[in-house]
Structures are given as structure tokens and as C-alpha cells.
Length: 139
Image: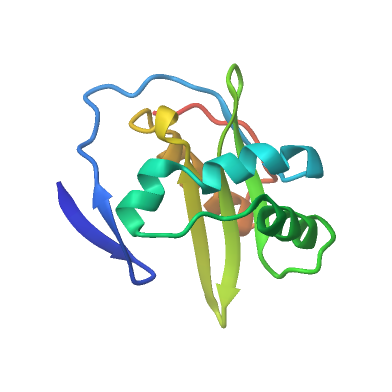
């Protein structure tokens, strides 16, 4: 494995799977009903251990979601949904000056299946105004 850094945060580059399973993914703006799932994703044990991050309280996650839903945050939060499994992760979209930042969090149970790559593609297209949150097939 190779250690890389995105926005100063180290992460491990996983080997590419020999075959990506075909999944239909969508990006949808987060809603209050997604809060508990997003909270669990933000507190993924494997991710927290890899990056050395602290656990986020439900209250902190609820505030984050509320600020996003109510437009009080400049950051956009979109959930990544699989057509059969439901929410498998989320993306964040934000700017630092004229530099766009896309953050992706995929639940550990769904990693290695191409979901992260497709989430990045969808988020990039969404942010560039090429598409609204929509479905794509990997590959």
C-alpha cells in the first residue's frame, strides 16, 4: 500500500480490485432523516483509527447536517446512495478561495467496490454544473 496525502491528511491507497462490481449510485442532498446514518459513517472505526480522529457526538453531527440543510454552511453535503443498499457514504463540497475541495467518506463495508471513485466523479460533475445529482454506472 502507498501512503498519500489529501489536504494534509494521510490516507492509505488501496490496491485496485481486479473487477469493479456494477452499482447504480446517486448523490442526493442530505436531509434530517439521513443524520443517524451520516453520524455512523463519520464515526467509522476503521477510518478513525487510520486517521487518528476523535469520535463525533450525535449532537455535533446533527448541528453539521442542520447547518447544511438550512444553508447556513458554505459546504454542501450530499449522501451517496446505492440503488439497492441505500446510503453507502457521503461527499462534501466546499471552497477555499478559488480551490474546490471534494471530501468522500464511504462506509468500510462498501469499500473496494468502486463507490468512492464514482462518488468523486458524480461530485465533480455536480460541482462543475455538468449534472445535478444523478445516477451513473461504474466502468
